[in-house]
Image 1 (cartoon, rainbow, N blue to C red):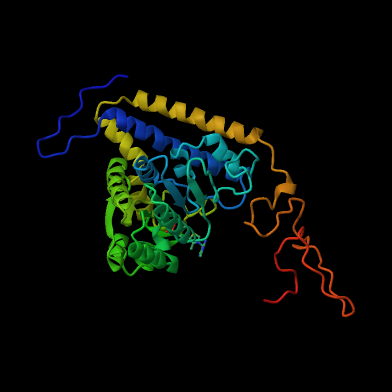
Image 2: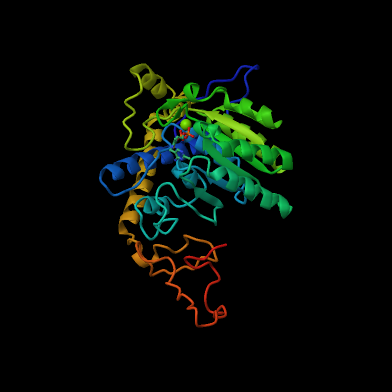
Length: 376
Ligand SMILES: Cc1ncc(C[n+]2csc(CCOP(=O)(O)OP(=O)(O)O)c2C)c(N)n1
Ligand SMILES: [Mg+2]
């Protein structure tokens, strides 16, 4: 690769990160960017159904956060999670196949865009209910603590989520019990069409941690190195048994989901958002440090190839068998009947005991779940 001599830092400035490390970050950020752009196109081609939210504009936050986790740490996210799954090392093909609703998807095709789940890489979802992931992540941190484990739980959410009751309940209990969890607010400035200033009495979200005597910080979410350093510190604190609230600020490049044209944004806002595009910013910085435009274009071609392979993999994967529709839906003791379809009765009709016959003993082969009409 051809590189000119990089500019020398002055004595007062911290040394810039090595160019090769920055190129690795750039490759990952570009993978997220190209994957998301391709997903948006597939959605308009009706290859992807349901909801679909993209990490466009958040690539530096995604890459920086994931670099701070060990493979054994746990991750909970909201519905805007494709990039995190990619950086967690899940194959792009399995993620795209999940978006396509195909059998080889990470969740067997039944989860879709919002419900990526992969126990092996410890990505424990993908949740569509705003704030739904917080109590679950807090519970996972309690489980780690209970088993005297050394893992950390990272729980991602948007800034709009910090006005949900579960945010306050989770942070309160995590602080009281000293749980190893990092709550990360990916503050993209907007919840659907509402700005953080319109929705939050304290728009500097990291300050809310003070209510729980919890350590916290705010970081520029368009700088992958700054995010990685801030996240590493948050993870270090959590591993020592104290929860942490990290806020990473960035902008959503497009609408809330792929069907939102974001018409509520002024031209000035659109221009400001584009100027803060983290992928373009890192590309410009790399060129400034001697990387040629041709090298960056080569990375782009490689990444586009990876994404094209992911699409081909998804397209070749079969649709799930409808008979598996209710598999993995309920934990025991609700019985799984993989042949049950929407509209079928949940339980077989229970014979009503007649007045003449004595009540029968519970059968050992029947589930012990309540039958319709049973009172408790
Ligand atoms: C409990 C609940 N209320 C409302 C919604 C609808 N909803 C989906 S996303 C969203 C905005 C969340 O914004 P933010 O937390 O900032 O996350 P972002 O989408 O910006 O990543 C809302 C209100 C929902 N899914 N769940
Ligand atoms: Mg938001």
